[in-house]
Length: 262
Image 1: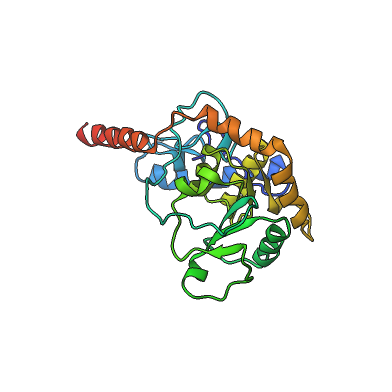
Image 2: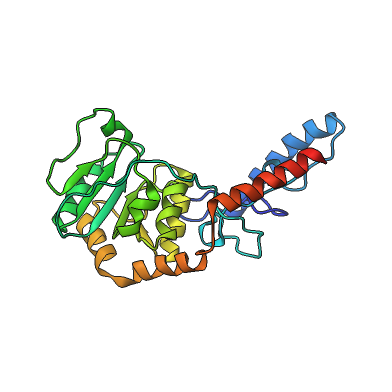
């Protein structure tokens, strides 16, 4: 959902785009759309963003996690989070810091990341649908356990030192609401933008913004050893301690019912 009353912002992942290029793209977009709208007797658009906002836009996020960093008063309704579900976390035995890893998709760097976590003395619980379905795991170690099914996120983050994931909204938000720092390996433009916001928040590291070859030990060591990452995550959690996903879902349902009845 882009900012209203403005040209479409760029999805620039690495550096800024020339303003003239952005303006030319907006001009071409509006010329094409408005030609169709006028031909059908509809009012033309003033901004490309109007294509995506609809008549009743609902901004289901918070300013810190907004992809575009627009700030302002909102209204910020908070993210749509599923409630409940998943098996109880079954952590490996030992005394090292607990790290939860969630990889919905595959990736070439997963083995290197897991190896770094183990070298740092972590006890790792990892869930990956592919591994749960029978794919061979990249590593085997007594301090590394692979979950057989999705894990209950609310439970896993109750006693967790670090979250490693691919920057999906649900898992990222759950970790932040629990005050857990994050090591994020985004797999798409949208997940990159969210990981960048977490990095700007100071609560984690966006691996995609680091240089190759990756310093996995350095990143894991920083997230576990430098208090500033956990402090930023806990500050976020304190700001939204009153957020209740069930109440947000109920509020949205009431809005939908009111629209349907009008």
